[in-house]
Length: 573
Ligand code: AMP
Image (cartoon, rainbow, N blue to C red; front, side, top):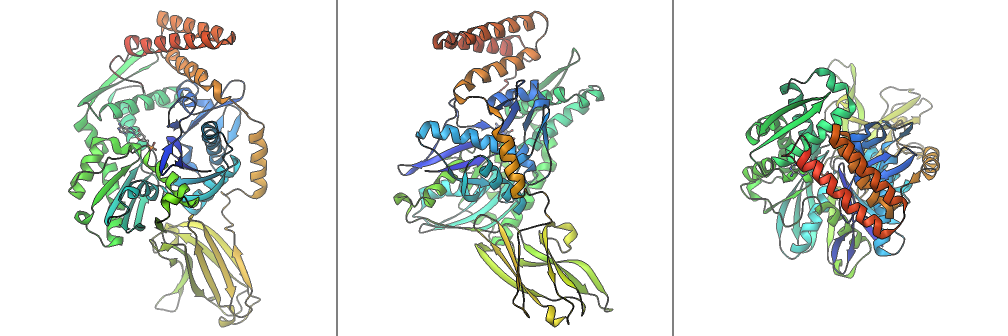
């Protein structure tokens, strides 16, 4: 069984292809959305998902979220005394999803199609593969998120001819793809995106506005626990403004309450700079495909942030039509990944569907240019594979040394669209020894091969000797070596993971602790007593007693959160 996984910035989902349709798999709490959060309990046990999300506020120093943003980088997250790389944290999420699938399917799950933002670079894709490897999953295919979303939609229209655009705004990334569907062939025409633009930026903007507008002392910004709490409140306000004209953001700091009201029109104003950034990839996608906005037959929304009316209005205005909402935007990428899993498994129902994708950015090398006066200038970018080339793609170009008797030729590999390499992303370099002959003797054919997973291979062959060098992109210290992966494996194997079947109780406890932290005086003592009773009930290890205690604690949480807390009008979901 191959599963489809949406490894998201804020939430992750797992689905599989069954009986002619993609189906979502619930986690042990019965939800198909697992928050992409990890927390280390006081005894060193790893908590994943909702329990960890609750602990982001009560234990910010032992919890992590949004690590997808740092995939492929050297950033480490500190959870208590331990440090984790983004790949390791992602592997813990993948492992939890894998266990949920195994619990439902009753068989080991070892193969997956995993979605990644179309704009993920080579290093970020490799890091995603490493995360899967660490979780015991073989990646059958990395699929671009908007392509997956389109696949979930396109399936219903496989016999018609249409052109659609996928607008995918998740927690941390924005991707746009334009696709053609014709007689069962689905072809991505062009794609563009912004790796640092998502719903979380909208939330941060609200938090920033609040810090300025509320008159809260600036010292509050250094209080990590307060800042996590403020972010959670800003997130709740943002969601509330999706269906109410105003919402109040109120937080307590050092015993004093600070409150500000935000209207949807003010929110729109605050978000203008971010909304303006959405236009750039949209325009580029249309231009690259040579298509006008009103020629699009359907606009498909994916990613939780497209729930915001502001985004829907923007899309409606730009394309002159309402976006399609046949699928839940949170789920559509995972469903599409499951369709791809079905395609991979060559399922009968999908026999006639063919899918092609493109390379989202240009890939090339650094070259030296001769200036009019004969002087040589370094630092220019020479693309070998142009963006939006259909993949898999293989292209070759020939380069020669700039001087006779040059001892070696260094091929520096970059990705991006800028004219100068310093404005693009360096992927690595390849050193070709030349033992100093003439310029002609040093000519090298450089072949770039970009596969369907978005992974690049570079091969350089000297014309004179036919000797070949391959670039396993080195110089990219950020990606892990085999030895480092083995070391991560060992470190992860030593971690204690909270048992899946006990996660419901642990999650409830984490939620109760969060509510406790923000109560005071008698309410706090009462909540503390409720938590104590719940723990006593758990210790009795009797299923009926536990179920009753759970219901009681849930009631107490709801009471304190809705009726008694200092924020009566907000919902804390
Ligand atoms: P994803 O990464 O696709 O799970 O998207 C999650 C993002 O969607 C987060 O930044 C959420 O804040 C955002 N989001 C979810 N629901 C809403 C809503 N009702 N209004 C605005 N943003 C939302």
